[in-house]
Length: 288
View 1: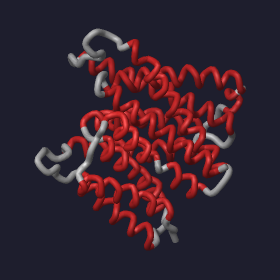
View 2 (view 1 turned 45 degrees about the horizontal axis):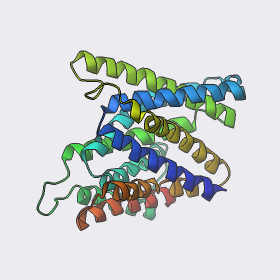
View 3 (view 1 turned 135 degrees about the vertical axis):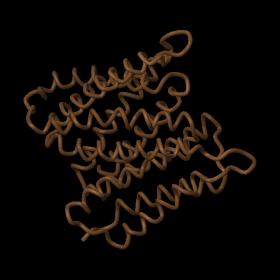
């Protein structure tokens, strides 16, 4: 069951990332985040009411609130990176979010074993190679790499916070609802400020109503992925769930290749692959 739900998480996250990045190429990232998360919050609100999740309210929800503040920053950075650079490079680099729980462990006195030390070295090498030059063309923009690393840091922080936000399934629904409502509020404020500065909130031609199903899919797939990951972690070793769930960049890269015909140079593909391998090593290594 752990493997099944963790692989489902990879599929859902990978497709959500692909959809979000694709939508951001036609609409502002803030708009994509606010609309998709609003739809997700509405659906989660109905689920909370139906399951009686309000009974799980307590101090732990502050973790969900904090995750909701960090989440929009990570998603906006990630979607902008996907819009600027090749998805086959950006998505694997975002899996470096696993470095956050590793850092938390170090802060608490844990020490990485040889596997994790190797993972750090491999991941850093992957970051450098993934931003390497294209033969006959421009390199992947430094801004794209920076945005991706900001997103990875944000995602890792969200994962750590949301893990502390609930201890039951109904509590998880409530925590995710609080997180999404906070996402919408924070993203809405940022969108309002952006419009006040003169940035367009909508693409030419007005709101892309034809994209509404895709926006709904992005928001709901992200929520569903959080749910399947939680189930996977509850029914088996968390490390196994984390490693299998980290395969979502493969889904994004395959979708980009299948739908967008993206092609990478060997050095960039190798860098993206090394980043993914480094992530797996970081997640599976033992600490002492």
